[in-house]
Picture 1: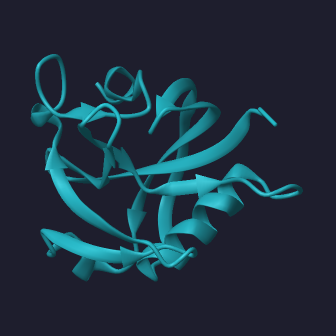
Picture 2: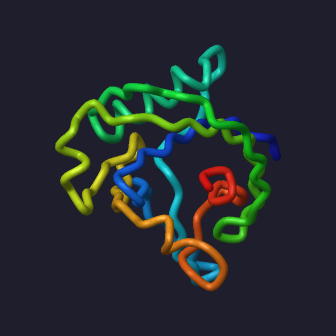
Length: 141
């Protein structure tokens, strides 16, 4: 069944860098990056969802949380069509030690281990590393 999935993501900034996870699409042979976050559950606000996701993934609370906007993300990932409405937030990690780590491994709820790293905004754009969802780079500039 095809459906639109609501998700919330949060951009954490560290000078000119943002915190992203590294993903890979084996069909496109493409490495891409996206800020951390996840699905909004029924009855849950976007703010509650991003706070829950970051607590699960990084064991940190979020301070100074601000809603930046919405993006619509229609995509193919590993050959499967997806459609998301993305609530984009900006925030500060309460666990300041996370700003000192260049890279970390995070275990998702499904047991999957993902690579999370700080990546410069200058590394994204045409002919450079891919940042999803589409339109996020423009929203941040």
